[in-house]
Length: 82
Image 1 (cartoon, rainbow, N blue to C red):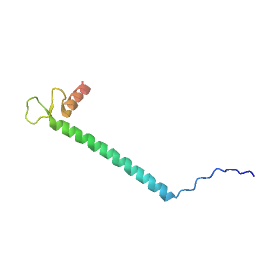
Image 2: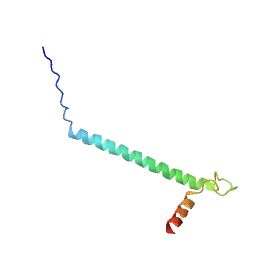
Image 3: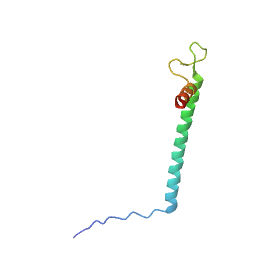
Image 4: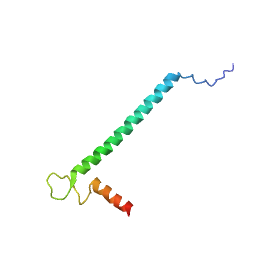
């Protein structure tokens, strides 16, 4: 009695199901990228707001140690222009 195991062919998937999975994956990737960009923007906004000169009321980050994003951007612009 010889029993041969044949490789089963994958069942053909419904085209609409494949498209639905692709759309869901694309939507999820877009959602994750959007959340990452919004988080980065939020961190930069908070950093700009919280940084300032030493001994200024309401300042959380001493500008001497960690500059403001706008000052960093200005310095980079000057370096590139030179």
